Image 1: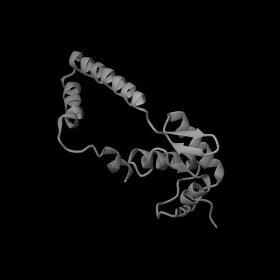
Image 2: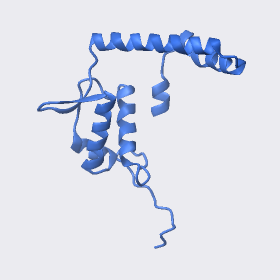
Image 3: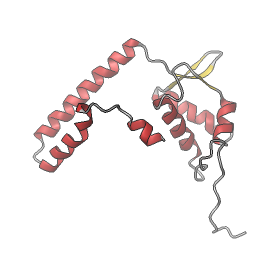
Image 4: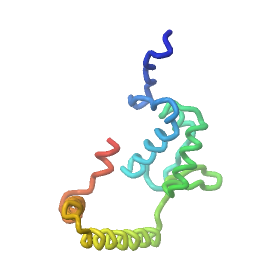
Length: 145
């Protein structure tokens, strides 16, 4: 067999193509992140390593590393005697996140308003248009579908 010939990607249980060589952990992280953000994995739901190894057709090492990365991002947590679970946000957590978002949006608006670049201001107005739209927020579902 020729080493230069393209390798046919393996198939996952859900029918999607396997990741390129060297991108296994990132592939698992992205898949789980999308599932969490799209609410396919609910807060408090357990993430069982053996099920994830089957789903992504990978060994336990990449799954464990992916879970560590997601824990560092704050999307999952490790509970004693339960393993990894999708993180639940407390009302306080949600309030703090909204405070951060308000401050970041205010800063972005100030910087855009002060920009001498009319094209940059126009792009900013275009980017924030969805805030004022009545349509439901489905950006994660589109990105992760």
